[in-house]
Image 1 (cartoon, rainbow, N blue to C red):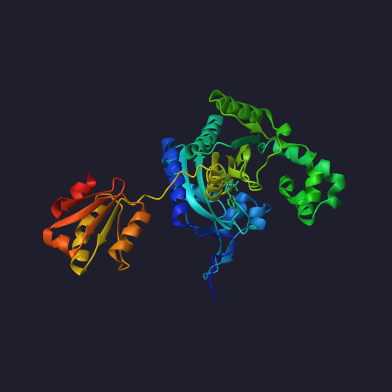
Image 2 (tube, rainbow, N blue to C red):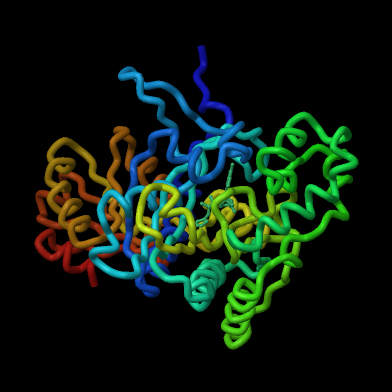
Length: 417
Ligand code: HAM
């Protein structure tokens, strides 16, 4: 029996993991500069949290949740996204008492039982932020600017920012009415799921992948044409902010996003090198979610980017600039005595921040020299029993091809220099 990683999951090996770490470091630094503090929430939550927040008619909840009963009979789900858990943690920890505007960021695996394909996995990773407590459209702008500048900072250029307003509790019903009216005569031509959506949650009709439904919806009314004056002013003010910084975007009047909790601002950032799964980041405002989850009536705004897709986009732009730390010193010790004596210098170098390698395969000096060459190190230190007797080591500088005899007590200082 050969075990393989479960379908839709991947092993991230050291070279790629170096790219991940670099992206994570840039994200942490960007989010921190904007005043966001890190939050880590559990990998699983009560399933009801996701049903309540994301919505029972969404694909994420109705088809993609990793939910199960645990041994204590609790119905739980691995988290399919990060906003609901952060909102749950915000409420549970009474964070509004600490600060009237709470700004949090997270880096975490997420789980969706989706059909795996390039850029779509069952375990994937999101980098996200949530700002809870203010309905200022300039906060929407801040979250979008953070997303855009983070993508630029990791080196992505071929991205497009898509914006829309998905209405609020006051104006959305008008839109829903007109969408239903538009489809009233063709209800029978909709797929089974959409016939149900038509009654329960017509907004979700717009997510359907069925070609017949898509064709029917092609000329349907668009949500942004139905927004009320306060929603329009909110949208315009946010755009004014983005315009003042020269950030370019496209208004996508039909974009509604696949989660129920959004109100007003919705945005996505796509990358042209990604094919079908082109969205590298998405987010928006959720002014009713905190209350809906049992907390105070506070508005929120956030976004999340998919790490795997960022890596694919970087590959497409051929700007994978992260590398594993290169080896500096290869310690080639020969003979029992020398192998023990060399350890002192090996660990001193490592403690001083130097990447130093050591042979554990019992290789000959020649084989160790070859391994050292392959590691790309700058110096090889050769310590054999003869050198030990003289109290020295031979240090070979590979780039200059020079070999020097160095006193053992000066070895670490010599290499650090
Ligand atoms: P989302 O659009 O569902 O939004 O996901 C955000 C990002 O996660 C996507 O743009 C994509 O890059 C990545 N992603 C989603 N599903 C997969 C998958 N199966 N495989 C690989 N990557 C994936 C949310 O999750 C919201 N919670 C974002 C948000 C935060 N809204 C407000 N605050």
